[in-house]
Image (cartoon, rainbow, N blue to C red; front, side, top):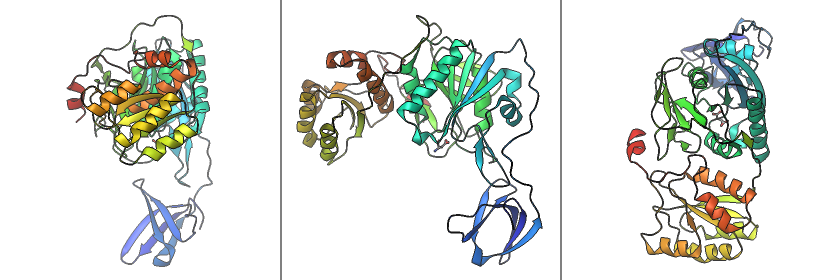
Length: 420
Ligand code: ASP
């Protein structure tokens, strides 16, 4: 039997039918894709197999369709970086591969043609946990080029795992961009009945017609295909490993709610004007670390200092504290010219290093409290700050000045209540 053949598997009293998929590396498992889209595997020795119908050969190309250009619609580029969202499953092999030409995307999600004239380009094809500094530069450059080409909106498909790092990094690398830059991911691949890929993509393309001039992230807001939330790129975080509504805004309300291809309701202020012309700024320092402080973490910090790190985000406990056993090492690091910024593991709320003695001491030594910034955004911002300034006073000024909506003067309880 060959991959892609339709087969029947008999295991005791139970019978399963589906398309034969590639085996695992041991070769002992037989897997099929069931008609409902789920995969199921059995030990070969436990089952009997029967061929029902020979499959067709695998092809990664899809038939071309004609895409009509409509004057009245915005011109939107969909740029692919990998991940689940704009991938296609070949049901014969179970393989996932990206589908990024406009024709392919429109065939997968035909509603997109009602919303925009779509063009597409694949920048990367990686899982987002593999993203690196050079990839971010590549993504920022490609987005910038499309902005210069006069596109009305840019949608970037991306894996969800590090999506919030990328949106934060892009918020610093791309300044005064006159159109919305909307990142979008999916928690479930497009072959699953519960996939969120199409709805998220439709909502993202719909949002590209707005006057929002920020880097944002558009993802499911609840468990239904009802609406998506648009989150500020510097204020968002992944909260759940598998739920479709995995992302939420931290210490700020989402910017908007998008009902698929329908209505868009704005929920908070957003940037409508931009200062100078668009700017691309790719200077980042790579030797920047982030430590989740925990009991007995002194050696982790010692290693970073010894390895010549230039900056460290300490994700402190509570209001912004670190174990006393760390204080000497922090002091040594500061003496060696390392910048230390403090965020909180609590996720919601803001750092206040004036309340407890330990916090005050660290602050006096030179650890900089970073308000209500998320740790991930603080890490991206510090890479950017140290890429531009050597003088630590200038780094501190940059880190404590709001650049892309990452810092708010006061925190409200609204967003906390909202995302629970
Ligand atoms: N690990 C994958 C990634 O982040 C998950 C996804 O595609 O959402 O690329």
